[in-house]
Amino acid sequence: MLADAHTTLAWVVVLANGLVGCWALAAHVVEPLRHRSLWVVVAIAQGLLFVEVALGAARLSQLEGDAPEFHTFYGFLTLVGVAILYGYRSQLDQWRYVLYGGGSLFIMGLAIRAMTLDATPVIS
Image (cartoon, helix red, strand yellow):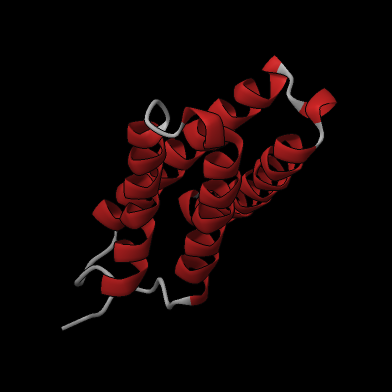
């Protein structure tokens, strides 16, 4: 059940970050798209990412064997991506929509990469 939740939420994270990435990039060019609800959806997409990583960590604690190194690496790298976006938001205020657009699409790519790697633990 935990594995199914982890897989399903992974797709939700990919789709949500893809959506906000495209929306933010479009908002950089089309001013009417610059709405407060964009930032609410960004927060939701990034919050779901933290839940996804927590589900993955809980799943790993139930399994025997070594953690799948690169799947875990890319999973946690997505959280680093969120931290980088948050850290640069003030310094790049005039480029905030591009920062979050490109950053959200990058996070989506990292999540897809994590999904394509074998998530089965390595039994030693």
